[in-house]
Image 1 (cartoon, rainbow, N blue to C red):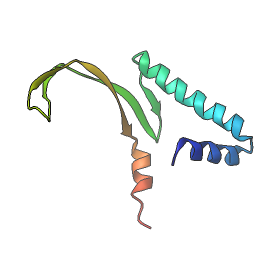
Image 2 (cartoon, rainbow, N blue to C red):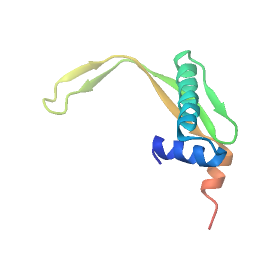
Image 3 (cartoon, rainbow, N blue to C red):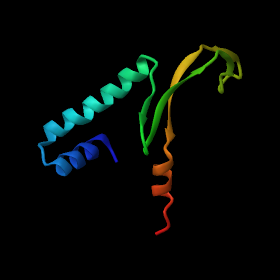
Image 4 (tube, rainbow, N blue to C red):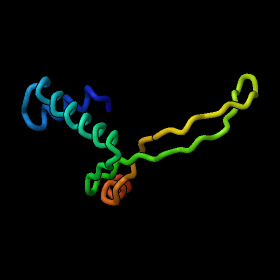
Length: 93
């Protein structure tokens, strides 16, 4: 599902225009990104949680030349699936 598909589904689900549904989807995404930028996690009960992990500096390798390269520390977003979502996905049909 793409973002456009999500906008379409929201539009049909709550019976609003695609433009209004796009505002809803974009606002949600901006809120998640803003919280992660502030170092906060986002938890959606039953669905999952978004968090930031910090990766320390390390020595990497250039695959073309084999030369060692220093990789700077960075923050990486990750998503942990909630128990209820896991159960819904793994239900036998």
